[in-house]
Amino acid sequence: MSDKVTLDYNGKKFEFPVIEGTEKEVAIDIKTLRSTTGLTTLDPGYKNTGSCESAITFLDGEKGILRYRGYAIEELAEKADFLEVAYLLIFGELPNKEQLAKFHRDIREESHIDEEMKKILDGFPKSAHPMGVISSLTSALIAFNPSTVDVSSEKDMYHAIVRIMAKFPVLVAWTLRKKKGLPLDYGDDTLGYVENIHKMMFKKPNQTYKKNSVVIEALDKLLILHADHEQNCSTSTVRIVGSSHAGLFASLSAGISALWGPLHGGANQAVLEMLEAIEADGGDTKKYMAKAKDKEDPFRLMGFGHRVYKNFDPRAKIIKKAADEVLSDLGVEDAILDIAKGLEKEALEDEYFVKRKLYPNVDFYSGIIYRALGIPTEMFTVMFALGRLPGWIAQWREMRLRGEPIGRPRQVYIGENLRPFVNVDLR
Ligand code: SDX
Image 1 (cartoon, protein in one colour):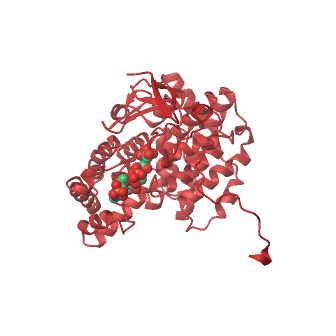
Image 2 (cartoon, helix red, strand yellow; image 1 turned 90 degrees about the vertical axis):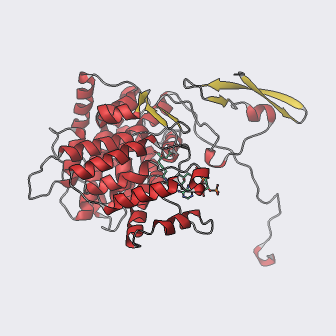
Image 3 (spheres, protein in one colour; image 1 turned 180 degrees about the horizontal axis):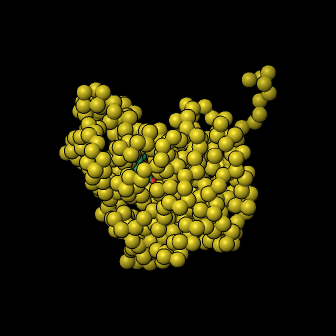
């Protein structure tokens, strides 16, 4: 493999180094492109552009590979728990027993929320979309945790990290309970991290909470599968906001807003709504396949396609298997799952989808499990954010510790050339 490329422009030759990552990915290092050639690049959606070097997550879209800090997602989903994976993503190594216990202890210490925050939550109408609520509450947390903003030492970063790992799940639970008109609940910090999240979300005020291991294990696995995904839209948002040193909570709030979009994390809600529409249409999957292929129709087959995966999303495979297991363990008959499987089969045999390498992604089956776990459709993307939280934190921490520069892309201007001002009475 050559270690440089040559650009032949205006009769001059310019050389740029080619760098190779630890998984043999190669990239042209164009840090000096503009200063040496006067040229910049144009790459809408950054389909061909690397924004950073990162040691957190590796994925191979052609081979359908996903690894967190070198560990295969299949192994982590099977053998680890979510808090362990969060520690791995953020700090780079799987924790030993003491490290994990301390991390959980430090988180439990910070799991209270200033009572004043409830007034902000009260200000939202029940009809408010939970993603808008949780993004606002995450930003509002800054006012009650000012010490988390200006963090440059690892110690201060750790302080901010355990605070948000502690408080975000409480806010997620409160957002759900507010919508349901239930009293806000802190759960029980003698429970495991994910079990306590489930209790905070679902404990009924007049009943004792009964743990269902199938539900907790399924939720833990779903959170692991969503934990990180290299430089996706919302993670890139967290990084670019964080690069201005706006602080961790502000960066996360921006990332939550980016995740909300139906082309990104909002797809899991859109998939369920699409499947429900197909069910209401008598299961007419062919009509929706035709809509997805009709260029005049903005409709897309939600849960299909991916910017990077041009093969099966490895997470979709794991979730599809888990959906079968969870629904049978819970004795849930869900016609939606059969519709999803039928749609998947049709799409995988359809020339339009095959040609464009459109496979089911992480969002295609996740909503079916969330629904079986009793999570309302509008909360699906909030659950995605709950899973993605440690990944966003890990990427923000790496960006800050590496001292990455403020993110500021260039552009190609295509507007008016210089023209003189015209007074309003002459226009
Ligand atoms: C996530 O990046 C990540 O890692 C994201 C994520 C993560 O973990 O963070 O994996 C989570 O966001 C998963 C994706 C969830 N979104 C959806 O399921 C929404 C439906 N999918 C798409 O809108 C689309 O596939 C994207 C947005 C996911 C990717 O779009 P790209 O890479 O910009 O691809 P494209 O829009 O250029 O599409 C290429 C072609 C186009 O057709 P042509 O112009 O070539 O004729 O494929 C078509 C598109 O019209 N196409 C689809 C389609 N997705 C792409 N046609 C119908 N249905 C679809 N779902």
